[in-house]
Image 1 (cartoon, rainbow, N blue to C red):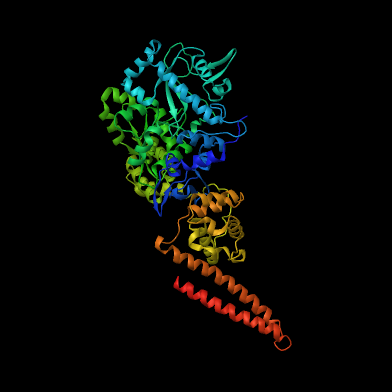
Image 2 (cartoon, one colour):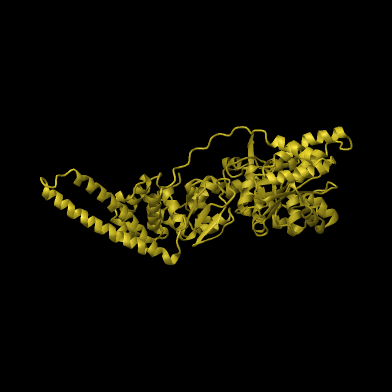
Length: 611
């Protein structure tokens, strides 16, 4: 059994894994000022970015869904890894050799499941590539050549060949130290009567990589007539491969997608290759499944989608391609971005188009894109004979619900006007009224959302900002914060965090803040308190840098002033219950305390006015 990873090594992995670089592999981040970065949250759907990263403290936090943590917890959440697997993955990325307690370090043995499966797939990809040059693979090389791909193109995309043998890959990988269980679990082999059998045999192979470039699966194209399997065979669902969220080519396209604010979605591996080689390096493809919601999430966070980007679907011109486009229409309004369809009229897919008409024709296909709403509406109209009144009315009844489903009212009205023109009614009012009537029908009731946490009142906002400074800039508050006392805070989680800060040595121990201070607080925090610490570490200060010290003085004065006011109210209440004649000594003592507290409050209010 693997031992526990050394704490020193975990700290070293964190230090050598810049959080902005790691998260930047998954999310397009932009400067948000104050040393912070911002992007669209990968953990929930949102139209405007609320996902913040603070590199100086090595933390991230989403103000929309409250997910937050450090670079390790991000990988755990985004890729469904255990803590150890996330550390091992980052260690491999940073070149850190991990040591394991209770038995020491044994290379290749004490890795998490994901790391082992990733390694197995990397070795398998190298194996397939090495066999593309074998005599047996002549049929595979001919397939590529006939589709306009040269050897350098195959190398660029990592295309390989699976020998037409029962266990060629399995023998190779077991010789490299991988177990039968690992090969089967990763989808590289399946159980046979006498041992593992290779899943892919006698096929052209494309490695499918995740957004970071790790090989997580394969797509295999049938080459031999005697092969009774499907034309394309993909890796099955596995701990590292989930087809509903995988996009082939995303590792190669992500930077260009971000740079150009454009993604082109095609239907096959050769189409991705053709588009990239023709000068459209933003192309990606689904892997044996329809384009769906999880694919949208992947593209949105790369596009930093706020309405400026484009997603262009290129489908075959046949009926299946049109159905695929209409399925995409169902999800289109989950994109803020503008969504288009590009269909070649003669039915050629991008790969065939490049072979027959050249690179320029592929680029022209993408440039000739049509808005997806228009394509969906016109596709419905195309099913009817619009040369007759009956046909036009039937087309109106079929197309009106499509137009009515457009959520943007202005856009819906414009397409209703277009629908009248496309049908040839020349009766705009009739068509618009029909669409409006359908759009006005009540939607099915949605489940109620959980009530949000009560917002902070003005004083609790001061508490929050003081604690924020104590986490981010503890030296600015100094000892005055540590002696405030828990009574200065009213919200239970604020009281708990104040007590945590004091128990960790107070602001003196925090110094200038930074990663070590935040990590100390997180280590001492309860599970319930940890999200608040993370949020405060990432949430930008609402004050200019040169005003931070004055802001801190003002916050301390505000909290002290409220505390003193409470003490005054309690003292006045007690004095009202005393008889000034019979209990003169106690009364006079309290009167002196009252005068001192009043003087203290005046001083604090003056300090507040100055701050």
